[in-house]
Length: 356
Ligand code: SF4
Ligand code: ZN
Image (tube, rainbow, N blue to C red):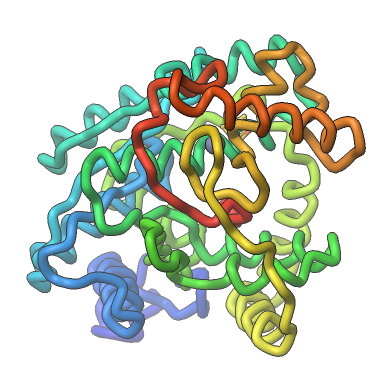
């Protein structure tokens, strides 16, 4: 006898990865969409009239996010102005193809789209950076540049908030990685559904409790148009191990993903860790925990042909940092340091130690 849907009694066609309940397709859509709506309303993520930038990469998470944000905004009258914001890291054969998907999504969802590139913001593409530094620290550069790029794009579009497609699996993985690295200070930030303080464009994760497998299922059944290829520069072995570990746990006990997030939240609350005091970058005005923001330190290293000095903590780097900060002070009126020239007039802020 066919299994019945636990919601409506019709023939079930799937087992929900989150709790293994049998559901028909329509009931799966309803619970999936309603749970995200509940996450948004319970956590008061948005206010009517706000402009929201949807960080769109063309991948499954951000494509489903764009689809769901549009759907819920219409269905429940959130009163939000939605825009798609994409960052072009300059990775040929990967990002150029995924951006084509975003361009199609823009038409499918009738949403405005802004694409900002590393090349125009920083004068470097990831292709050029990898040529310079190899495949070891490329994601560190890319992550710092992307955080700023998203902020700058959202500031250009006068957005109140940025939403990203980070799902429950991503957050649980990051909790595991932070614990394995002994980096308890980051647990609060990585488990927060919404980050940002005064003067910052806050970031929200409406998929905080949404399982990756369900996002894939939803995208598949709804036949959404998304891009699946991995970045050609993706080494991230450490995250890969955390991911495999998490997937193994999920097989035995699907709730493990949510429980890891809760544990991360609880540990972060108990642990009173002092975060670095924040000021503004003397070169570009972005939020920073020392004289220069991370992106400016990295750009300076790249432009000097010594990118290794901008990674990690060492005395040589401190010396260079001091020199660069002095140079930035001098440059004050007449211009700025090399690179990143296009962005200096935009003064937006963001926690430099942001998780993503
Ligand atoms: Fe950038 Fe690394 Fe992600 Fe590729 S895998 S887009 S290089 S952060
Ligand atoms: Zn800076």
